[in-house]
Image (cartoon, rainbow, N blue to C red):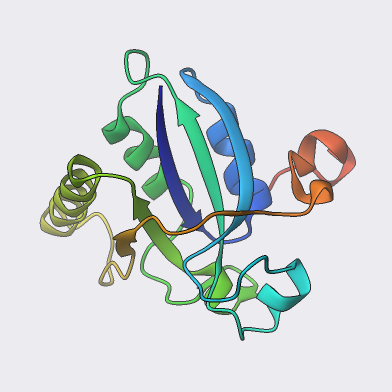
Length: 156
């Protein structure tokens, strides 16, 4: 089994998309990339912690590759928007790939180069590629949010 961590806007929809992929064994939403230990949702939303809303994925690399996870990541959000996705604005909604090893870092960089060369997006991709840092699990009410609140649906 392997881990992957991505930030692509509000973590509810991102988690729902990744959870539906064959080969993804589990997902968890949380906060990473900042400096405040044990941040709360309210602290992250204050823009003072530096954390992003992110999804940590446990996956089976024999069933789904990291490159396939990257493709899904780039398909589910606009990686050209800095510190926002749709109506959600703030650094906690930034586009980021938090790599767990050198191979993930290289795959993420190669993926961005390929998308840029192919002209997949009209604007420059601003996705950060940074080492995975300490992970802080989000409050329980955020976990699998759309499964708990199906009437809200998923925008994806």
